[in-house]
Image (cartoon, rainbow, N blue to C red; front, side, top):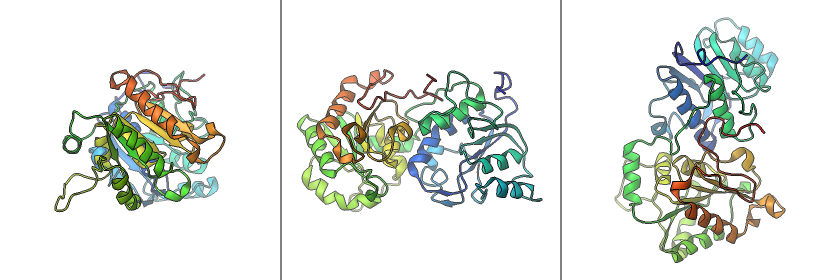
Length: 380
């Protein structure tokens, strides 16, 4: 059933449970994609206390590395709720007397995963309203209002569709996402206004997954930016530090804002600084990676490069987005994406400019700019 606008309002919603997974919470990019869902729920239900279930192991990014971006919106993390995916095992666990979560009550439960067993277990928790996309919202008290899709291809739209189902309406979510002022000030110190900064993120979690466009491609794009009077800005993860000497030698004009000088110990660093730096960029080029998602969340117009992963699912939540995929060149090998095509995408973003980010940007992959809206892709 669909909730009326009155029933889907904020009145009476004082507690929310958001269930993510019972597995490892170790994917930075997917955690970034859940930030708009959190923002939407907090905007719709400002008085609600939010309990977040991020998994039972891993880095717990929203509780730790990304905590400044959460900015107190999550009141409680539960990291020991291990629900079986098997329906029979989940049912036995739900019937077990004395399980602490089953003895609690939540006004709203939002189930972000699609394992049937876990969905049925979560429905056993006392609640007023239950939202789940499992089996096209078959067990949910509401589905995303028309014309929004019940199963959009993009993870970002999936998350935001859940919020639309919970509220009965689409909610505008800001991009850049709210960034605490200390991080914004630090970003402005590292990339002072007045220059055109082009972000380049050549890594992707595990460099051996085939998700990384060749490093010489990033160097070529960086050199072209230097020739046009722009400043290349490289972002390197912990596993990519070995590239630093090569990049410094190849592009001496480039900046590496995450690198500390000798004796310099800035108190503000890490993934949240990357997000804040994204706000200072005119364009960013990134593989399908956590860093790419951070830069997109910070407001950088994105050129996102895809090899074995699918942009239809893993595209970042960005104001302005051009996705380039290897399949358009007859292969899954990301190296097939030509340097000239990436450079042309950078020029296209720059030509459109920040003032025109709301306009659709057609690309060779058939994907356009994704509006920063809950459930951005309407049904066709």
